Image (cartoon, rainbow, N blue to C red; front, side, top):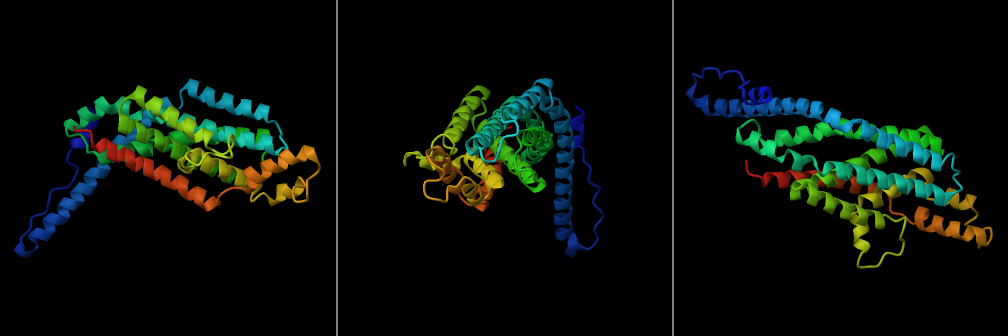
Length: 314
């Protein structure tokens, strides 16, 4: 009731008396615009505070924190102080990170709007707020909550596994991971808003993430032409490529280190590794394309969710 009273209260000052008839129309238009903007931000601030208060307990419940910490420690133990020469093992670690932080945010986000549908429709019907401040408050309230745990995860995993020991490489890895989390979360929000049924939406997002993982570039390199398009809409594909680029660049350094530039490498034992370097490290798209794709998906999925929510009548 406090939220309702605050949202619908008239916080704008009374309009000043206008004596000049020629300025009446302009003054009324200016006052209306100012009142509308002030009301929007008033609703947004109240809904944001409510969202942060509610999401704080959900995002940092003990089970979820345990899940993330256990995964980080397990990954750090499995790849403990791995060598840069162990290319296959390193790429397996990077792909595991991509899988974990693709599935977890998207699966959690898919329940957001279906679970709030009844309250959302009821509050909108009573005139408490419009859709845009509710949606922006929900998105803004999720950001700090959803980005803290991935940062903790990658901080533990990165230094335990001995990835590239440079502060710049670590910070780039964090940025890539957080961007990937936002894109994956956007996918979950969009599917949840489109389907508005928690069970159906969770099933669809599971199938979508499975397709993204299979076409991410680690399991299958020679993808059939009729399914090749799937990797270009896969958030996992772009995240995996960026993580590889942070660790190995264009692959020239590791290729020379492994002797792949010479004919036949260092014998039969190294040919499989050199093939892995050629396919996974050197054979990748430009980082700028991957960054642009993740940004486009993070924004585009949220716009799609907003459009889907507009279909719901108060």
